[in-house]
Image (cartoon, rainbow, N blue to C red):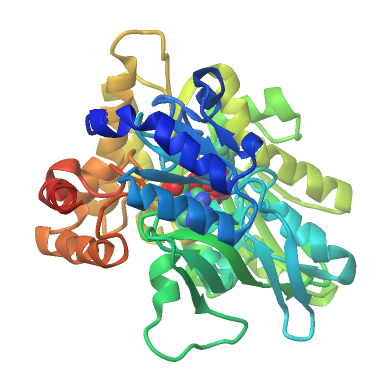
Length: 482
Ligand SMILES: Cc1cc2nc3c(=O)[nH]c(=O)nc-3n(C[C@H](O)[C@H](O)[C@H](O)COP(=O)(O)OP(=O)(O)OC[C@H]3O[C@@H](n4cnc5c(N)ncnc54)[C@H](O)[C@@H]3O)c2cc1C
């Protein structure tokens, strides 16, 4: 993975940068000892590592603004960080950067049940947003599998999704406003506690912008009343393609489950050994969940089971209790961890039209043979968001490169069938060099022109999202101007 050469000039200013940061932050919030900065050397894409020059942990928007003002004046790149669970290398540092972590910014600022909103500092973890309102019968809908750890900051930057986003939408559909600090330290308010905003819709631009445009410090989120009830049904099939066709038929029929999750045999086997969720040993498994009153659930599940029956399932098990539902979900939520017990893995994230599922699954199986690397598929099938997990051995020379080539071919296939390079994990560095597979030069130019406006010095989250050769002239021009 190519990264820009760290600036010797910036590295030579380290002591001055640290001293300036210590003037605006408590001393324990400025981490500069090389033994300690190592804690920030990677995110969940652990194949790539690089300790930052400095890491800072502010607690207020004002402190974030002070840090950015200093870095801007001293021409120091800044990499924003939430909880570091990005699977795309979005929070990977450069050796000459300041990591700005929002982990200490985790307060609830306001809850407003009448208007169904909550305002939080963005270092708050996803699950603890629901934690703050569930006793009063509310929840925050986007539910990445990493929700125990990942922060709202990263969710906004990556426009994260999750199993239940089929019905409730992803982060962008549940975000109403943000406070954002620009690279020069200016603090701006975008959106708010109301449904629409006058002027340009900048909120849509910020959500999913991967730390390229500013640092989001506070967010107003939509919260929803908890549904009356929810019930999953577990379906087993003896063929991946048949399971894919079943998903396609459920969507086509116009039933709207809250989630449709898919796992293939390698994932089922790993998960059973790890979480003992009671899954059937078959080629493919679907978890389909619906919500509502008992009568609504019965009605929807009867339609869904009827569709499933047409595909000759080897197992069709409707949950009969809260314990059984929790066990069904336990397996799915443990799938990534379970695969990690077998070997190193790279988790891909591409989106395809749901109707292409059977064909894409078949092609991934064929590619797995061609590359000689095992792959497990676990994903949000209802909205076509695939997560092939390619197993490789990081200690075996050449295996990582083989895995990267295999992953790139899968993502190319997603684009080829009319899908997208990413579904919810973002581009980061992982898919950076594939952006020109999906976008023409003029498309990328339009995206980079937006960055020029928000971050003219190109200091925020360097070397991510845009292929280096495509952004080179802009980055160089920004350095000359600095
Ligand atoms: C086991 C596992 C399961 C996962 N499951 C899912 C899933 O189901 N759905 C899903 O969408 N993702 C999933 N992910 C990926 C990851 O959890 C999400 O991308 C998450 O939103 C990252 O949040 P974070 O706080 O850890 O962000 P980080 O990893 O710290 O950063 C992610 C990106 O956000 C930027 N950023 C961080 N803070 C800010 C800020 N304050 N302002 C601006 N930019 C900022 C960073 O620069 C980086 O580009 C999973 C990851 C793991 C490890």
